[in-house]
Image 1 (cartoon, rainbow, N blue to C red):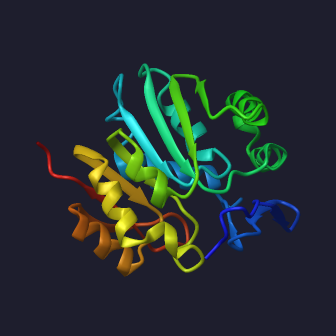
Image 2: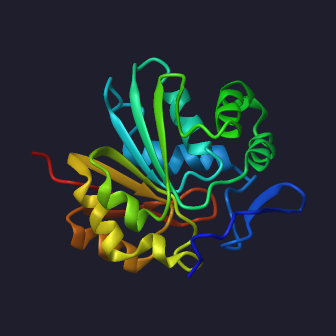
Length: 224
């Protein structure tokens, strides 16, 4: 278990790929990090088709902010979308800037995110997105959240490296904070994660993953 007072530091695999020193796991792959985000989290939640003004997205694991930026681009013509992310170990702003520089096509939307992050802002707007990043252990912070998400991005580090983020009790809280008809998507296809989400009330499916990852997991809560 990682101590709460530990600080995230980033190492750079091959000088390019950001790797968490706390969890020894990469934040994304340069072999298609943005494409993977769009495949797993956007398409996995049937976005942007479902987006509408007031749509609410929640996320476990803010990381580099790549998921947020991809969502902001997808929501540009939709109107206000609310985005709440739970992050225990925020990445330093300089590391975030270096990580996102791997995607030069994102330089425009990345700049205001990096600026806000460097100022310590955890509530800010990014294009059509109203952003709130809640710092702390999600096992404590999520139960206190009053919101309910229409779509969840479950993007913690690998279940093998960070099992606390995939704890059955936490995934039950995800379900409790999901609107009727709401969805989730995650890159992992670990059996215990699928079973926990199913036990929490989601209809769960294993579908094709991105690139070399054979499978990922998506799910829906029953409509009202």
